[in-house]
Image (cartoon, rainbow, N blue to C red; front, side, top):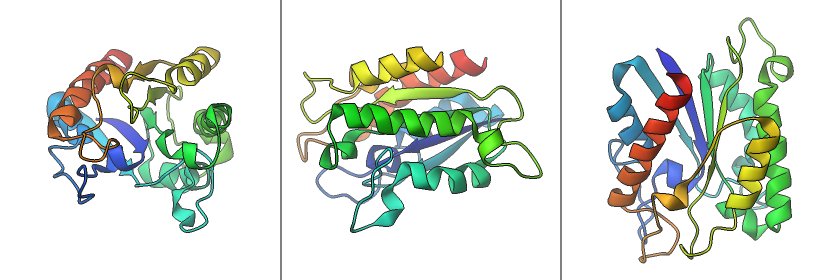
Length: 198
């Protein structure tokens, strides 16, 4: 079985647009990926509403992705792939350059997990693999996350995907995906994950 960690924010958690309750498991893009790839894959759903790449929310310390990733990796290991889709909430604390810096720190921590988080077994028994996903944006015609994500993926030699090519936010709140868009993104990510892991 191939273990795939999906580390994200409310659009990974599955917030229903305008309501902010949670989509059912099989509706969320992570559930769509699981259903498409089947029992040979274990899709680990780790989304938290409001999560940033590396920035503290004074009202909720659980939302800093960089601070949380160690606990997440220990809990999820062994891993074959980590999928990271973050950035939407960074805009509350930094600019697009800060987003790049935060994503870079988080990505490098994941790729160096075996050294940074030692234990009785490795986080990645094989070569660490990371898929970066540029998130959808409140204005679908604009994709500010694409350049930083693609640049970092190139520097790290890791694959990436632009979620805005496959999904858009629902007009109900201009931020979260409805069931149709979760499905479209899930189909695209399932194909990408299978391409990476074979």
